[in-house]
Every structure is written in structure tokens, then in C-alpha cells.
Image 1 (cartoon, rainbow, N blue to C red):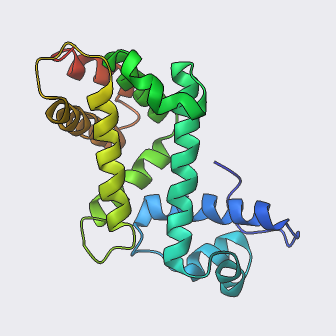
Image 2 (image 1 turned 180 degrees about the horizontal axis):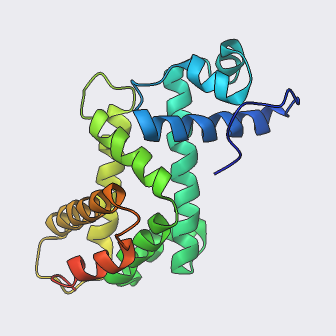
Length: 199
């Protein structure tokens, strides 16, 4: 994650400023949730005005969508890298890859970014509310993850969609335990133990 904290007064290029805002907002949301922060909180940390943030994103809701879209694309690229496939071939390659390897790649990536995993855990829970700005986005995102697990090669004797839901539930649960005690829990080791009942 990029440098946080109050700005130095240095003018940044528009794209660099947007990335700074995304980094700062991601961290604050991962700590307090979407409803727990304001545009003002983010602006203060960036050393800019509320108006400057609205200039780049329009609204707080649009800023949140920009954060999620940026983080998701970063994760898709990292996921493809972990699996050794091109980004553009990621989803077409999944049916040729063992499910265990697909899951291991996700867990390995997530183990390197606890703040982002915390961000998604908080937003996923908040977004259960129908009026949340990323309610629909998270519903579609969750189904995409389930479909990814369902389409990978597997000998687990379970309907693909049911298998996908079970694996996502297991992964979410292991990650929550890890987030509560990062200093003492090894996410990758915990996942290997938890998933050994399936693989």
C-alpha cells in the first residue's frame, strides 16, 4: 500500500493523487468501515480538501466503487501471476487448473495483504444492507468467486456450485480467524489444515 499520512503540500499528478486517495481511503475503511469514515477524514490524511476528493471521484459512493474496482483488478493480476497464466487468459484457464492450486494461489496472495483482506471482510458484511453503495457489486463478486471455484478441476464429489459456496465459506472463516490474531496465526498453514478435509 502506498504512503499514507498528511500530504506535504507537493502537487501530485491527477492519477497519482487518485491512487493516494484510494490507498488512504482503503486503510481507513478497513479500520472503521465505510459508514465510519467521511470524505473529510480522507482529505485530512491526504493533506487536501474535501473538494479535491470530490473533484476526482464525484461522490463518496463513486470513490468506494473506484477503490473496489482497483483492488479487484490488482488481485486478478496477482492471481494470474500466482497461477502462471496471462491476465487476459485467467478465467478461461481455470478449468485446466486443480482446485487445490486455485485456492492456494488466493490464500498466498491474501496472506501478503491483511489490510486489503480486512477491507473486504468489513465491506462484505456492511454490503449485506440493501442500501449499501456496493451491495449489488458484492453480490456479483461473490458469485464470480463461487463460479471460479466451481469451474476448476476437482474430484470432490459435490455439485460444482455447492462446492464453490463451501470453499468460499471455509476460506472466509479461516481468514477472519487470521485477521483477529495475525501475530499468532499463519494463514497459509491454517488453510492447509482446514482444506485437508476436502483435498
